[in-house]
Picture 1 (cartoon, rainbow, N blue to C red):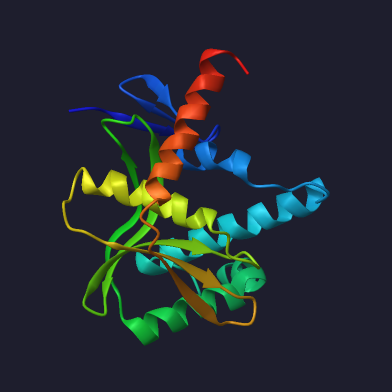
Picture 2 (cartoon, rainbow, N blue to C red; picture 1 turned 90 degrees about the vertical axis):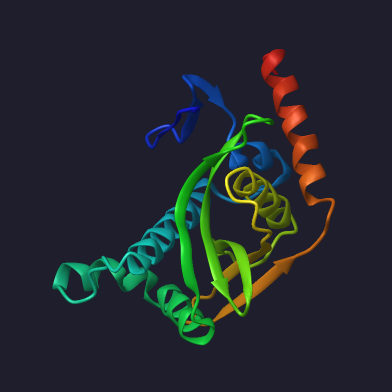
Length: 199
């Protein structure tokens, strides 16, 4: 059985000791942040990380919402967390997988799927987002995650993104384009070409 390892400090994955690209790394060149100040990008990245972590702890029944320290730490993301709680109250999802690290044995890439959930009579692979807009590239991202999950669990899943808003609301987006995974594989091919030629 292959061994997948993740280094938090460098956000890199290795499979049996060999570095493999992450889903985020493969898709990142498609995003354009031209003209956006670095400080703004850093702040948004930190926000996303903190929202993800709080939602993960909530699903693990390990979120500190009672102590002064916990309340102070959650204050900047409280509304986003409220949106996640509202989603859970509305849909009553069963959490099958929470921030699970996976790899694709054939295509040799890795990533961390935010959630696999069961609700409304369906299985969903869901990515959590705290962004203002929802990019179609998230469909490509979720297709890559779902393809990894299919190698360990043949249960077909719907693909979605849960967009959390700073007013405490949420919106569930579903992605159904069958070409999404083909787009990801094309980007993966380009990534490998760049690596081979040190571009």
